[in-house]
Structure formats: C-alpha cells, structure tokens
Length: 109
Image 1 (cartoon, one colour):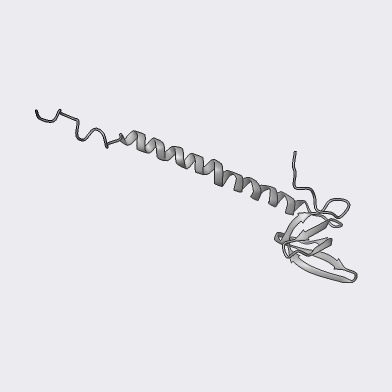
Image 2: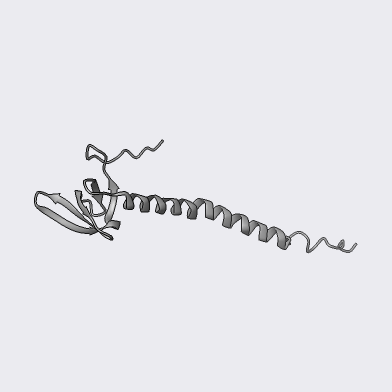
C-alpha cells in the first residue's frame, strides 16, 4: 500500500489568509494594549501642563514641591521657599496638588 494522496503535506501547512489574519489580529491587540493607552496618558499630561496657572501648587519631576509664581510660554517660575524662585520647563510638572497642598489620591472613579 502506498501513501494516500495529500496525506503528507496537508498537516503542516496553513493558508496564507489565516497567517495574515493572525498577524493583523496580533497588531490590533498590541495597539489596544500598548499604543492607545500611552497616547491617552500623553494627552492627559499635555492637558495638565497647559492647565497650570499662577497660584497652583505643583510637584516637579525632581521631587520639589512649590507654588507657581508666573507662567511663561515654555517655562514656569516656581516659588519653592521664602524668597526662593526657580525657573523650570513646563514639562517638569509631575502633578498638580489639591487645594490642601496634598498629592491627589491615585484612585479615579
């Protein structure tokens, strides 16, 4: 008895359409898991930086907490102690503190 026709090669082969479909599916999963949330965070951060105004208490990326004395186009003047002001880039703002000057809670509804 000889081998039946088509029995050898049919097991290990998949159709090109299935392979392409699987790759499209994986790219879509990657987009929704990695890229889309990152873009959302960037958008929120940009809105936070654009919304800061004079008088806001902020936490800088260096860990310094201060009150914004004035806002310029790309920089902020931050009062960090009595008679001590520093100029920082707007991108150095990590968080805006709440009215009490405390870090906002991490839980969002």
